[in-house]
Structures are given as C-alpha cells and as structure tokens.
Image (cartoon, rainbow, N blue to C red):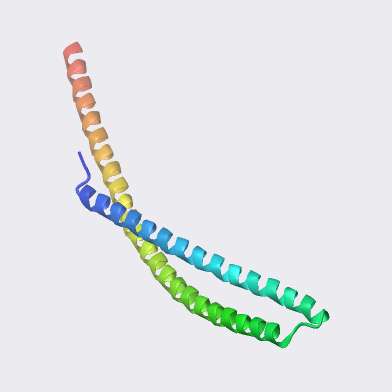
Length: 144
C-alpha cells in the first residue's frame, strides 16, 4: 500500500531542491563579489607599495595626484562592494532559513511515511500470524 501523502512529500522534496539551487546561486554570487573585493584590495595594496617605492625616488606631483585619485576610487569601490556583499548576505541568510524550513517539512512527512510503513507491516504480520494460527489449528483438529 502506498503512503497517502506521497505526492505532497514529492512536492516538498522538489521545493527543497529548488530552494537549495537558489541558495547555491546566491552563494556563487556572494563568492564572486568577495573575489572582486579581494581583487580591489590586492590592487590597492600593490599600488600603495609602488607609490612608496616612487616616493623614495622623488616622484612628481602629477603622479601623486593620479595615485590619490586611484585610491579614492578603490575606496569608493570597496564601499560599494561592502554594501553589495551585505545585501547578498541578507538574501543568503533568508534563503538558508527557507531551506531549513523546507527540510523540516519534508522530514516531518518522511517520519509520517516511516510510521505508516511500520503500522502497515505490523498489520500484515498480525494477519499472517492469524492465518498461520488458523492453519495450525485446522491441522491439529484433523490429527485428532
């Protein structure tokens, strides 16, 4: 006999899979933004080191202004990346909560399915035992 909520269980499993897929996409986007932030930080650090070397060699005012503009731009880019990462983190946490809730609902139905299967097995075993008892009693009655 099949579980009466099998369709609902399948639907919940599909929903959970879709939510996990969405969460994976958000996580990928998060990682890309983190990588981009790290790239900007690395470029800034490299440029700071270059500027420090050029300062020792008496660099011109124009070069200093270019570096200053670059550093201001990278700082603005890092702030934007921070906001983007913050928004993505919020979305990721919300999606994670949805996935956990979907998993909980699916697991609840799986537990019900297991209990139903156990109940069916016990009923079947009881019927088999009753049949075997009937057969044994008939055989015993014939032997008398």
